Amino acid sequence: MRLKDKVCLITGAGSGMGRASALLFAREGARIVALDVDEQSGRETVAQVERQGGQAAFSRCDVGVESDVARSVEAGVSAFGGLDVLFNNAGVLWRDRDFEVTRTLETTWDRVMAINLKGPVWVCKYGIPELIKRGGGSIVTTSSVSALRGYKRAQDAYTSAKGALISLTRSLAVVYGDRGIRANVIHPGMVDTPMQRELGEEARTAIARAVPLGRMAQPEDIARVALFLASDESSYITGAEIVVDGGLTIAAG
Image (tube, rainbow, N blue to C red):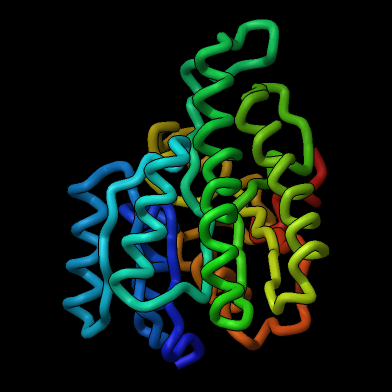
């Protein structure tokens, strides 16, 4: 029960790493504030948490819209009395329109930045005061190995936003450390989520072969790292980056 009596807000909780984290955190004693833009999938996450004996509340939220985030944080506090953990997990990767900068439209760039970068900013803007009221807490943010290396097939809006999350996290760690707040980043590699399944089986098999551990990650692989960073087991870790990619970024070629 590593999160006993803690309230954890998770964005993008309707599927993939977000849902896996909601279920795992709940099994470890947390009450879950599940945020997602897809109401059906978000409510299904809540139902799954409840079926395993946990507590959860859903709030439909477009994290790129500040007023949505403010309302959802308020709803979570109203449901469970406060917040202890902020897990900035929501994100988008649009391979069909997010290209190298010379081909990327302004509307695409702005929307990717709104979801992938402004979303965590708004969650922290409204969530950090609630953490402070509880005497501190943990902020966990999902970046990507894309922030650490270049790829010939560019998604420059996605990569730029994920890179900016590193700097944001470092700033949060320094500014709010004396208030008992820790902030850390996870860099997933290729994870078997709906975002990656669009690649097709042949491409996914090729990716798995390129990973030293020989497989793509499962959402639960990332959720377990998020659990560690959310819990008091990581009480002396802040401003850190943890790469969870099966060795992909250190492999030659």
